[in-house]
Length: 121
Image (cartoon, rainbow, N blue to C red):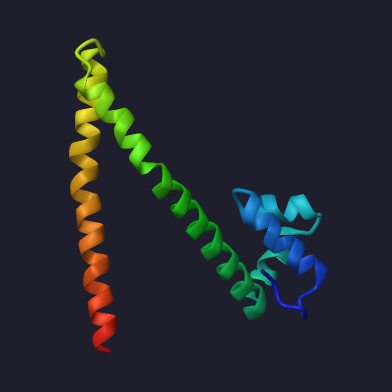
């Protein structure tokens, strides 16, 4: 996650940023001022290490979400297809599927187009 030449405080700051909601919260968690925290963010090495750690965390979260999508869809379709489910639940599921399906298709299409463009470069 971090480079060997980073200080322990910088490493602690990166870990705190990843586990809190704001820079101010991260600063309080490790006992530094908010001003010092923002100076840390101005350091290119800290910024690069933080960006790398954030990318890794987001990638892990995306993989976990993707792994659960099939089960989630199965559960949604079970609610949608169950005549004993409350109509409000069935309408909510139908609405969610109608909103999410086209967005997912658009995202996949854009990703494929970007990959094709990158191959041509």
